[in-house]
Length: 481
Image (cartoon, rainbow, N blue to C red; front, side):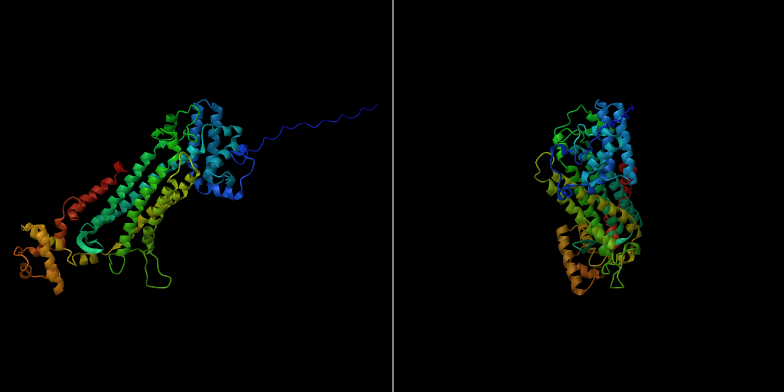
């Protein structure tokens, strides 16, 4: 008998592991997200810039899980190695972003699982996206604050350099856009140096209040695992761990404070740009912009427009609007986390980008300006700019200031009626108003005498401005940076 050939039974292949669900909460849901809803709720388009901080926070969290005995040493090392690979992909531009995963957190986590396997799913133990996003934002804030303070410092240095050149250059000072009293150009420029110094200090203070670790707060109630949050804070460079989990995940005051500081800074930068734009008009003629920072007209061949300065002035509106947007978003939100808070990022990032753009272009623009100091000097004493000095002259002769003010007002009225300047009035004409006028009066009302007289700390006398210039240089030194 012939034996029948034995037929081999097909080998059973183990079932393929189920693919990870597209959404981390898919187990609860029976219906897929509507495409419109998915697009509407996704934040990846703008929160992807937080990836360096998300990866850094995840590495630190893996270490914390290891210390708590929730990961073995080999599991921890596998996750940390996988996160290093994720970081490299993100840095090189080869990371496979998946929009359906909504945000940067889930993209990083899912890619980690693809690289290291199921152990990657342990990374999110005890962690919520609620405390994860606050961590990313606070790390990002600490980083960009340093960059912006450095940018402001470069603007200050450019202003200080121009002030050092113009310590003896008289300029008409204005109130109500009317010529008021003579000052020196350096005094005007240094005013912005000290304004921007306060802006730098506001940013530094904002950073101090943001220097609190939120990770470990969980979704709202704190993590249920024995995470050493103090050690975690140290690992991530925070001064302390947040004392209240609800507060940690549900407030965005660090964003609001930054936006407020940015709006104030934008106001100062806008005023500086407005001064320069005004001074560049033919009516003033105090400054000329370099061709490199100006544009022409598409129809008028003669035009030279200060577009860069005008845009600096205009961008303050964006900074104000971004602050108002986040304040309005946060108003009335019940504790703890609400998805409304996702709306903090786009205005915040826009303010960061706006400030960085201004601070990049402003120093070279300031360095390239041509100040028309001859024109400034010519008009510094016009329009009765030294009338206050004439009143001060009478005060030094013993007349009460209010009486001296009245006398000089009448002198000015006479000069106006006769089409003269103060310097054109003779001693006899002046004595019609007060016998205290004497032969030395002319020397008291020159532009130079007016400037010299204001030698108090903070005054516009060249000697006082030299002291202020030295003080500004100290502020820019390394000990105050």
